[in-house]
Amino acid sequence: MEPTSKKTKSRPKLNPTESAALQRLEHDLITDSGTVPATKGRHAIHCLTVIGTIEGHTLAPDAQKTTKYEHVIPQLVDIEEDPEIEGLLVILNTVGGDVEAGLALAELIAGVNKPSATLVLGGGHSIGIPLAVSARRSFIVPTATMTVHPVRHSGMVLGVPQTLRYFEQMQERIVGFVASHSNARALCPHQRNLTDEMLHMLGERGGVSGLNLFPNFLTTDPKHTETPLLEIAAGHIVHMMNAGGSGCVGLGSDFDGFHGESQPKDASAMQDLVWALHKKHVSDDKIDGILYQNVSRVYRELLH
Image (tube, rainbow, N blue to C red; front, top):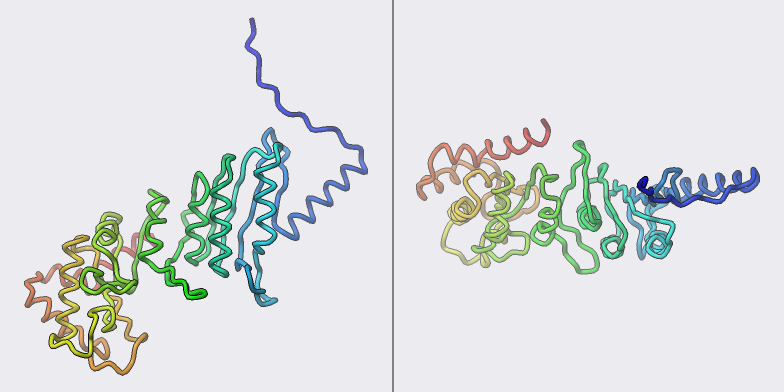
């Protein structure tokens, strides 16, 4: 007995007028919303594009390309309910927008019960990360990067500590991570600072955190501390190295982000930081890593 083959679904034949109308409809869908409603192969996979700015509760400027979430939500409902659609492919290249709307789309994509995958082509905004990992499988092209930074919207803050967990889901697709302005949260509970667990993860992935010299990132009461701020900064460095390894610390400084503080004022203070590290018995080779080698290593690996 010959094995029976699985029957594929046959599509009804269309007359020339119906075929032309269908082609116009598909063309309009691609042009207006970037949607490919059906494929000509054996399986119907819905292609959904999320590009430009995610437009939510407020209108984006006319000159910006947008993905309107009120258009995407009905599509996701239709994908889930339509028996003809067998899978979902989400193409991502977003530059940000309405954070709440982006998270809503991520929740809906995660709720689709059919096979789904996301492909990141580019974009440098943190809202792309929850979207990227919302499907069952996530892929990113070698030339794409995803940058995490604080996103403030209606009083909500999404920063490095809150979004680092999404990077775990990208697994081997993450080739490098940089926390540009973060210290040790164990020594100063600022929301932008990293916990010991985050520092450990950062070190395991070969990433680096740039020490922030802004006083509010170093101590809870910078105006009344008797310890020089650079000595406090040296304490953060030692703690961070103990949690994540000597290769996970660099300099973020943030000199352009604060003004009027008594110290440090500019890069001339780095020699004082070196002396403070020597007082804590940090070796010269580790200091060289902190000053330039660790950051240089990460960027060489990312740009290679």
